[in-house]
Image 1 (cartoon, rainbow, N blue to C red):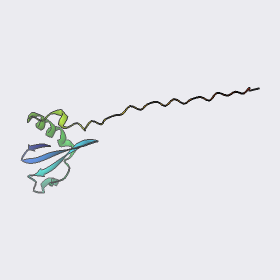
Image 2 (spheres, rainbow, N blue to C red):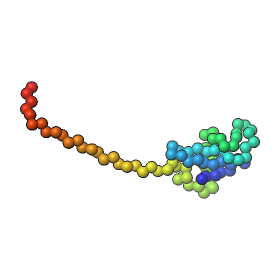
Image 3 (cartoon, rainbow, N blue to C red):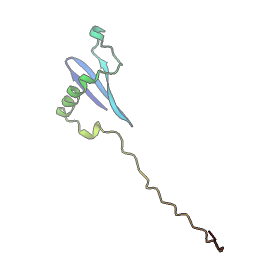
Image 4 (cartoon, rainbow, N blue to C red):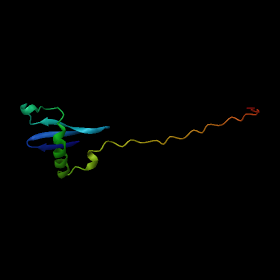
Length: 88
């Protein structure tokens, strides 16, 4: 889990299959619309990510988990032979 402190506030990064998001954890007094356990506005994501990378977290900590992609096998359809004569 990625945990960053920025401007006296503590944030956690929540990783999901679609990407991820930042959540405020501690240091909130309810001022300026900031509350604990709420998603952080996307305007702060860049600063939080830079701070996390500076603290030693890797880019892989922010990337969604890799899915095992199975290659689909193409199914060939067997053609039926017609033993008949077509007259136009």
